[in-house]
Image (cartoon, rainbow, N blue to C red; front, top):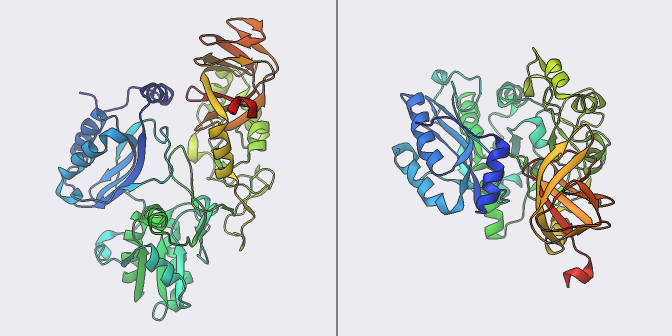
Length: 456
């Protein structure tokens, strides 16, 4: 009986591409009394693995917290797997506004002490005595009240790229840090102010609102379903967004755009930017903001040290990593001496720029044609290998390489090798290679950007 992943992320991405089916990214949570989290975890894995559902899920004695990717044609079957449990009957599923078939590439279900690391002793207060839930318009209305204090209960790297107007955005690494800081800052406002709180999907505020009521705050409110549900409601009901910028999400997309405002900077050059990336150095994986120009020049790296490291032979890279704690434990998210334009905790009052993302995507959509997919990247020689599955590619053509980690990279073809030899034009079925200044992955697609005459 399979209870764990057997495929790598790249293998899974390839299978998803070959299937060609639409997937939905969604999230949900539920507080409940689960007697045997391990048994519950295994039951979920068996049911969800059979539906090709992927995601990152935490279960504990206190409930479940899930961010997932589900095939659209299996959505109702997936909902049925939740309805088996009384505490998840009729549960709200926060479906993402922007979809990406590669948002999650593994099914990871972990048993934890808590579904959110809050550092609280739940036995010391009534966790069911929560704040009043507000829908989007109600939330907007309360924001206009001068007696309202609005607090962002997300982390610094989340609020840096997007937040509600006038919100307090603590410069914290995690939810646990924010609770005592906010409690201390707002001691003088317990009686007369309305405390309005929000987070990504609502789960952090479920606990925070009960905690602050226990601390003596009289008027506590929370955004129902968090920013994800708020976005859905404002789009469906034509409500003006009081959230500016991008909503950080915990999957390969790393963000959903809500308004065109860009309120943050590239951490390397200072250019207006709100695109997060993870450092390509496997011994780092620092999460930081990086513009397209720096991404190309630095090859997705956060520092020259990491850039030099990724070009070392793999054996040497492994030696350098030996004994190190990798991932988030190496650096704090978005904080490193190598990053010169870090603004966390000091967000500007006005947007730095307007995003052109939507317009750019629209133009690309009508002016590109899929040629094929990436097969390999030779890091030492900086050569990308692709399989041409459609149309032709010639020297002088403008191409777009797109993927969940690579982003969108444009360049002009100056030299092509097809099936091992130089050529002027590669045709369908050819295995081609050409020089690239950045790394490509198996999930990347190769497009030809059409000229106006070709697009007619």
